[in-house]
Image (cartoon, rainbow, N blue to C red):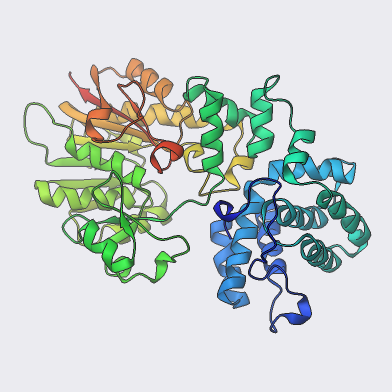
Length: 481
């Protein structure tokens, strides 16, 4: 079950979820799904691992039935997303700060509280199964866990939120942070990017808590989106001519279109900012030399490579990390893309990255990734405001180098998967100020045709709650001298 299928907050339906109401004696032999979910959550918290990397291996090892694997996936991602809300409630139910609860018991309690408050699993089954899990991972805390979970089960979610969240009219940021399970600094940054509209901020935060759909990119010249959608049982994207949305729960790794190079997994917003670069008219000459400055893991480079074939161009894809450079090489196989392992800020220091050597330049800059929190549920708890100075310094250095790499009349697209204003408009303005070359800021919205709600311009901001994409930012510049 996913968050879309749950009842209204606090409500409970009598129908049992797959795997939710069975006792351990009723299960077929094999690992307990809740133990698999616990192992995933504990690994994420203990080792700073990523759920999307840890969970598939655990599921393969456990060899669970499909419905039990779906239950595990729901519990892991839901518990990680809702950790902030769960911890506020558990602190009251346990009469102690969650930091004072031993980590094994704490992660098991989070899983149990998530089942009680955010799923249709019957309360008695959620409590019983979680107490059994605590008996395995933290035997000394069994009685404590039983008491805490029974207190959690005493109230529906709405009543708990009324108790633990500050009133909206007194502290809107604090209220939204608890209700929608995001750190306050992220809520504040989203609200700033949305012009201070806390109502729309709430809609964005709610969208972050929904499982992200899988988008495919039909590679230009190798597949058409309409045909690919028919082949995989999906639907064409709303905005990108290359996008296909897979049905919920469809495993993309099994698709033939991916293995034979006709498509790759890529968010529709990511497709749009890359494709926009190919649409911007250059001045004073041809547009045959393209540069992707931060190419790993290769989705944008592959899309640009397919578009370059159609326009008689060639792409240089730069990636500094060796393992990511190898991923780019695999992604662009058979396309007119040269992969260069180098620091993209070294423009002008050698023949491979000459100054004024490119007609089109893409900078998909490293960032906080706040625009993709729905895909990486643990990221919201790991990122800190202290991460911004180093990232924004790198972003500005890369954009200054991109302007240096573009020839006079050439164009630069600057993109980030973050709506934080310091990483978007502020970084663009600062890089333009630092560059010795003059640039013109074009209206990026013109190169995202048919998309509403992109902002006041000249930059463009995509949003999960408005467009169904990651929160990609796009600025388009033309070097004038």
